[in-house]
Length: 384
Figure (cartoon, one colour):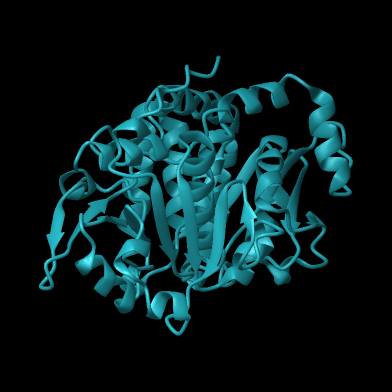
């Protein structure tokens, strides 16, 4: 397939071009990764002046080298989100951005909000929420949330349907993936840089999981398969994998290189939100570990995703059963997961050859829809 034509730049309709994004890092590196990817795309593709305020700039610097506080990278100014910062504590109304975005768990500090109240005209305030495929997202996306102090926040929900905020996807992502797939040397070079030399007939998986995942039980399944597998494990992820015969330690990759790793593997195990979305666009079979929530609140989100994915991917019945079973097991509590994983993961791997075309169908269907950054710009420019 070919990349869809780039959507028209709608920033001319915006009330202003200065945006402040406030990001608090809760989900390890994921919140930082999402905040950076959005900020970068808004800057490079929509010509906006961006400041990314982040409370854990060290987490961002791990993913994007060179993004220490005070630096400007790809048109985005990186600032430390610290309420004691004099610039935030003494923000004047004229210093408030035209558009203020609270990223995920992030929010503008109280002193900044006081300046928002005094600003004329008022800034547009957006609450950028976590991604979900649950049906209620479509009914809540775009709703205003008036505050007692007179400010109005507007909810923006990433999602999987036209009535949601969509998914992050750069304009050239599909074209870059297709160019990579058409060049076998690109895959060989990516793997060689990681110290991996593919073996004839083997399949490769990448593993990015949370610390409580029963990694040994997972790797044991791959080791027992009739087809040979090796699992690439970034350093710092899944220490329990050390020494396992199918585990291959590889360097932790910065965000700009991660897509190439996903494109180089036959199966990708991902976590949270950022790597999850990138794995979807990679068009490879994938297994998602959602951010664990109390009382299993994350598990309905996983089931809703499988349902949403299946609508566009149109997998065979055995493939869908494998995807559903593997996601159900991988997102169970650790002890339950370890017991259920052999049967569930084998069901997915047994249907592996049917999964690849289904993953391509999902990506082709969704690449024709507006990306998240474009929807956000239109959301703000349309007067909310």
